[in-house]
Image (tube, rainbow over all chains, first blue to last red; front, side, top):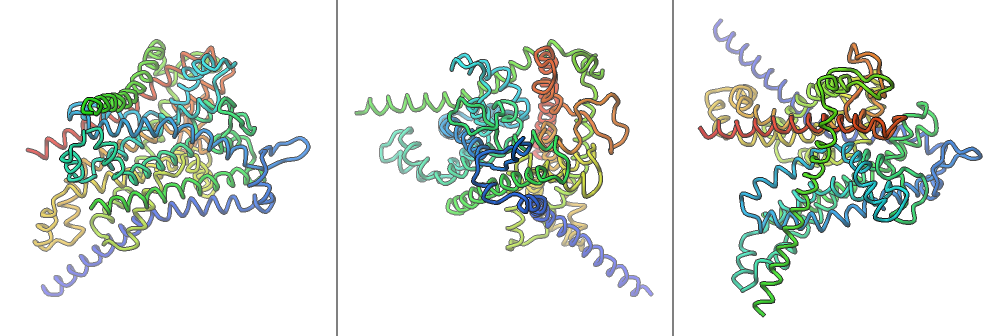
Length: 303
Length: 285
């Protein structure tokens, strides 16, 4: 009798154990399911668009005007150019400042300064994008208008400045991690050969951490490309092909945000917006994946 | 020669210091500007009343309530799923190709644009699950967004629990799940909650994912159930600063909304930081 009970208890425990193991396994797989699910849903909802819109029209014509009076047009070149214009501007601002600030925090600043500065950078990362967009309207907008003598300052530069602020925390923290993980011996060898601290930073540490820094910049770029609210509010949203940084632009994200609220479900226009979303997803996915591989290899090399 | 080098170093360090100072300065100016212009519109009425007269007067209570509601739903969905995934990765999984794919997926999920989460939410929660444009749809969308951050923070918390705790339980004959439940989770829970609060502070300010999944321009009544539409702080700020018919007139209200939103997010951050500090001193004792 006693033996049978023990066996029963043992079996119950084993079943319980197996149950929780599979539960957590399913939960772990869930992350892949979500990522694949996002891709699958975008693909499935964008597919009808490509039945009705010519692929060549979508990828190689300039204008996006689904409510066109004479003819509807579905080209994404103008918004693709806008997206990259704003993003590259943002990177041009954020990369030098970000690397400089990271190098300062890693090699120049004392431990006390670091302890204060690091949480502050985290706070900067926590500022919601809609608040930055608001700042773009009320602060950056009049400043740019005055500086460039334009009627208003809602243009690509404005977007670039705000996206640079958004990308900075990402770039700084990952660059700093990369600089910290450069082996001490590199630094010591350089200093022992008579190099100054500055020479060591510029010629030894930054080159040694370069792939990590590149990954940091790519992740910052991914963030900037996918950002919606700041560019929606601060870039003026004119759906034309921009020819200069002082033009109002409308990025891919802004187009989706403006138009999806107005279109009826299951129309060509609706599917077209998902096609833009799919394009955006693939671009950011590629950038993040490459950055991830670069960073992974860098970390492996350091070890 | 020697002087030249020290001079270069002097200017070089000056440049680096300027970069770091610049970043901190941006933050200070940003917060200072919003505090200066927004603190004037703060009042008990602003926090507790609904907008009146075509949103040109009154308060933002419905928006505060809406944001708190979706954030709670995001926590209810995101926290258990995130913690479960972290437990699998840290306690059960071996370093196989599958776990590596899971890890890459987590990092990639954190880079998916917020507007793409919005599109996903529209199709999955609004249409497929038939939640409609509602608090529930928006909350679930935000909950999925928190996953990568919650998982990373929870895994970090699990890693900090000494191996001996697990081994002790296993040596006494506990099953793996018993060991995790009694000897690992209690010690990791604080870190997990900290991480969850931080990730919630990030999604509470998101606008793009709730744009089409349930946020409303203006509602005369407070939502009655999770299947109703809602007003949210970030969306309210967006409307007040760009879509309102008298944008210039409602500027003070927009500043006030921005201040409340930032205040909410900084409060969440502060709570997480204090909790983290508490845990650290507790561990030392």
